[in-house]
Image 1 (cartoon, helix red, strand yellow):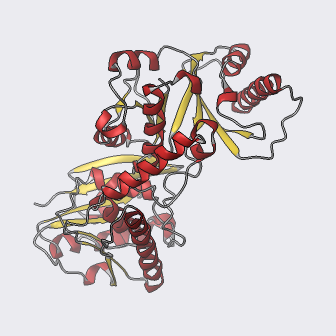
Image 2 (spheres, helix red, strand yellow):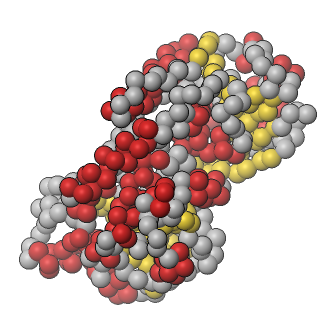
Image 3 (spheres, helix red, strand yellow):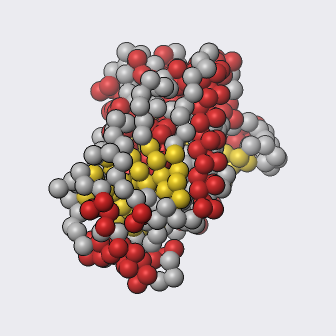
Length: 431
């Protein structure tokens, strides 16, 4: 069975692992903790269609150093893998991408790296007009450390393998792009094939954002770290283009975040068969049928800037339209209520309910004129604790003295690194 790998924001690995388990996948235990990614396999047959496979055998195979091909999955195993790969892309909220690990082997020199990559059955995945891109290389405590050289060796090994099998001196490279990523950890190489294409934070509903918008995947992570549940009111006092309220809406109604887009795996050879296309259609139909419209969801947002609220409402409308089209295709004419957005400064707000959650991405020093301006804003935000008694609060910021500025120590603080940005999520629980 081919292992799947999902990268995420550094610091959110446990959040992603919990989400994978809730979706019915089985996480693969690592010999050492991995940073910014989680490996997993198909699991519960009622959720992923994995069938009655042996968990012990799969977990052992995942770390055995084998080189895998699409042909390694046959019968029930093939159905389980392909369904799991698609469902992960369709349903994961907190992952940045989904990869298939095609090889895992010892590589202490470039010859070993070349032979290990060349041993992969790339022809099972690609068409003859494919354009292969080795987009990223990560090495840690390994003999091979030159990222540029590693990229070149991996690229050459793939093209030599394909050229030899297809008897072509040069590949035309006129077709779809296929992206490969390489991790080398303590001299062990992991060769990953991108199954997502565009990053998974590109849900399809946001065409315009405010200044420094928060990524959708990071917003989904914050919802989990805050322990938010659909029965509780949620308000974003600095909503910008509406990402946090919209992600809360999707989560509360069980709307799969990938319903509004396609994925790179749909262009790979194993996913172009009639059976695979039927599986994809079925997965999308099942996701549409899982959408909940029978629950009361009280999600709102506000911002002092009226221009960004135009974007927030438009983004929310697109998110609901995407869900509505999916439900219509599945035979339902139910509607998803749109979240309410209002123009207001945070110090003009009053609690509409006795309890709830304020979850916000307030302006950071990088988004204001200077760090001192951010500190003044955070100091004035202390009024929220008085205006919303009985509520919890979650704030994400890159400001290194946020707790001092707001005048209250957080119950929990979690460091998160999304892209090149170092942030901290502060959770304040009601007193």
